Image (cartoon, rainbow, N blue to C red; front, top):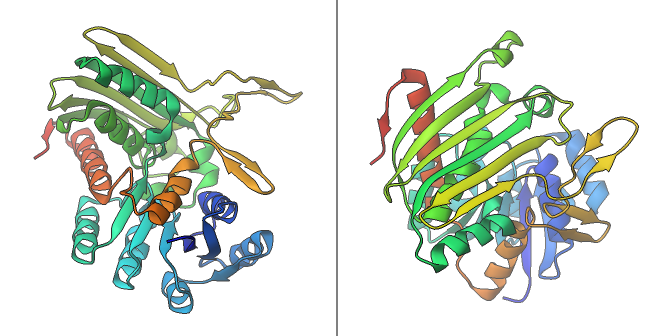
Length: 337
C-alpha cells in the first residue's frame, strides 16, 4: 500500500492533534473526520480544509477508508470501535483507554479477532525516548527489577474545565492506564495483585463524583513491586498542566526520570515548563513522541508491519485499572487472573 485514507473520530483537543498529524503525513492521501457537535465540526472542517461528518457510520458509508483513528473522550471509545469493526475497517488506532470497562474491552478483543482487525492503542509513553532508554538499559544486561515508582498528576482545571465527562472517568482511567501499560512494557511482566487507597474530597466538594487521587501497589509476576500514584487536583499555578516521574531500582542500577525536560519559560504571568519533545505543531508539520503513535500507525499500515501496541495491551491496562478501583472501593487486595 502506497498511501492511505484515514477517518478521525472526534474533533476535540486530541482529535485536532490526530487530524493535524495526518494532514502533514506524506503517506496519507486523504483525511476526513466526524463529530456530533455541529459547531465544532464546521470549525474543524474549515481549519484543516477536510470533510466532516456527524457519525462514524455516515463517514464510513461515504468514504473508502483504510483506517480509523478514534479520539473521542475516554468513556466513549466502545461504540465507535464496534461500529468501525462491524463496517469492515481493518486498521484502527484508539486513544487510551481501549474502553472504560473490562467487559467492553473483552468484546472489542473478540470482535477484532473474529473480523481480522488490527487495533493499536495510543499508549504514547511507549514512544518516550527516556522510558525506552531505561527499558533498554535494563534488558541489555538481563538485570532484575526490584521495585518501581511512577506518578502522574494533572492540574485541577483538567477535571473542572477541560472535560464535560469528569464523573464518567477518574485519574486512574485518564492517567493510570498510561502507568500500568508502561510498567508492563518495561518489565515484560503482568500484574498479579493490586492494593489501592484513594481520596474523594476536593472534587466531591465541588459537585463531582470521582476520585481526587489514588495510590496503588502492584505486585508483578516477575517479583517486582510498583507504587503508582495518580491524581488530578494539582493547583493551577503549577508551571505545567501535568507532572510525573518514574523511578526504577534494579539489582545493578537506579533510574530516575522526571517530566521536566530542560526548558523553562517565563512571562509576566507565570513560569512554564514546555515539553517540546512531546508535541510540536507547525503550519505543515507535526513532531514529538506524543504524535509518533499516529505517524507509526500510518507507516505500519503502508509497510504491512504489526503495531507496537495491541487491543490485548489495552485490555490488560483496563483490567489493572478496574482492579485498582475495586481495591480502593473495598479496601481489599485484588488478584488478577
